[in-house]
Length: 375
Image (cartoon, rainbow, N blue to C red; front, side):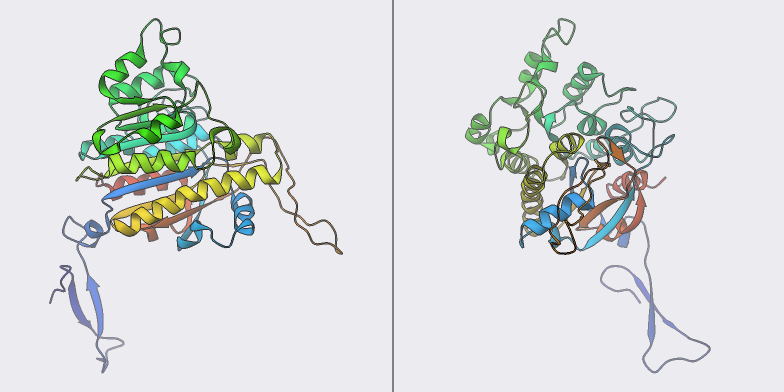
């Protein structure tokens, strides 16, 4: 017999005896009408706090009893290695998330052979979904670039800018205005071309004045290069950017894929900065997590993922002395580490991201959940 989900339930004999209470084995198809199809999200919000490991999130947790991240019940650890290295960087790990393929240092969504690999954004577009990429640094930086472009080096910022515009990603927001200018584009006025397709804003005030219900595509270049730490870009600015993106993307009946990055958790960790700065960055990012989970509560078909791309700084939290067990921050390196990263998931398919998982497997699961099939 079949249950309402289309699954077949069969009575089962255990050790040759039929139990008084029948054990049921559920046999479900994995095709379009089976359980796998039902677990597919209608939309995906992928949140990346660059460089943030467990210690970074610990600072946020100890600073508040109302951490939105605690609402996410599926937790795993990501193995961040690349195709030819152990301690990875933003470009290869974001590329693994975006394509399901591990690659070399500096590579942007090309495989170890330097050939382009289809990204989850392209899969979403093929399904008719809207797409969005945003960050607190230049929009051409490694993490957003991996989801929207294909180049052999993350330094090809002009090429990345062109690919974003030519691909017509629905919402693009961050810094990086200078890389659209003619002097960076060999005389081509890429910003003028983009403004023929996109509604355009250059400041947070212009963003706040925007009516998202009147916008089909949005380009927000809110700084010449990076947007800076919270004190520079403004508290809650990334949340405002994300809220605007959700207002625009959420109107698409076919759903959307949105990637949101905070870069400063990485940049400040490279600088081995003070505890207060890291805590502020993580709490500001957690407000974006809160927004995503609130959106999910209203749109339960939404999958929300929260992770980093690698750990930066080797941040540890030792205590001062046996007499005074006050925690302080200690850094072991100005570079990256190979530490496993926490990943948090909530929504359709979330349980598939639990346990220890490779970074390329995260990308493969995103592909599968969006209907591209497995590898």
